[in-house]
Image 1 (cartoon, rainbow, N blue to C red):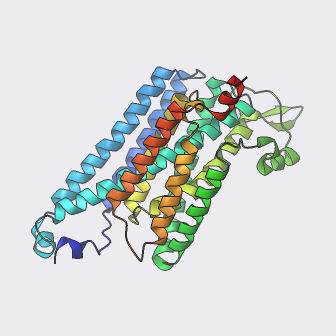
Image 2: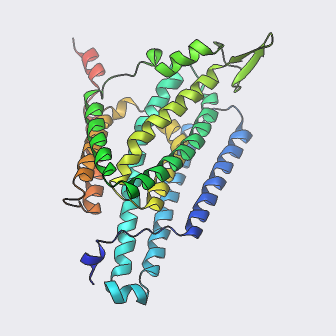
Image 3: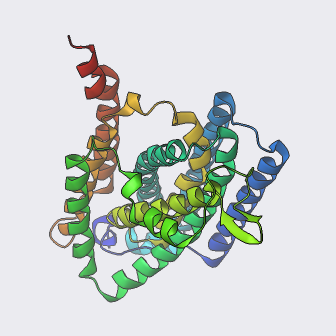
Length: 344
């Protein structure tokens, strides 16, 4: 049996010790983040600090992928595999899984940028002081990790039992990409958000912040602070973006370990990336168009899964190219609002 025949098999690389080690890593990373948060107290994150942490998280992601590559290369180069699939089988598996991780990571990271700009809109709408944004983000990240882990496991179970759901995911991604393109320049209206309306109709709220507290007591009555509302809105946004992004990565790979690790690594650096990009929204004003193209491409890839399997290196090339072009054009073409304001 050669590599072309081996490619027909769906190899899942996650082993119990790998799952355990990754969960331990995530818990340690979150603990360190929370401890640093407590030590700094209510202080705004500087651009330099955000840059350093962003570089660290990206570096850790690539280190993880490199270690995964070396482990898989060594494991699948053993005689029991090479005798059946050929001498290059170890390299093939390691290369394919590493590209799957990288493609999934880039897709989740790029979608997270759009997520960040929505966070910025929420903080601006509720006039959240920069020094209070750190805690809301870390709690939001913890919630996103738990939510995505559950949704990924449910998604894997559904795909294993109902193959046709891949077509539903594909059609949904194409529709989502179309909607993102059509409304790329629209600003969401938080004032009419149904979640915010629901909370205002059923909870007593203060207009001012009480430090980082979520609730305060006044004359024996519990009031929710804007901090609680901000955290709730961030949680809702996490759900919305997870519904968009998780089906996208299933078009790249059905390996639960690759799906989960690429997702979580993209999320872990979200807090640092927010403070890095918070003032750069206008610089990447065309990014939504690029993300729309990527979602449509991934949706089509999923719809064609049983007709033609687009190679992972092609998917990765498309994702990188579209992101690079949209970011380059964002720097070259001024935002529509600014071009209009400069015209006589």
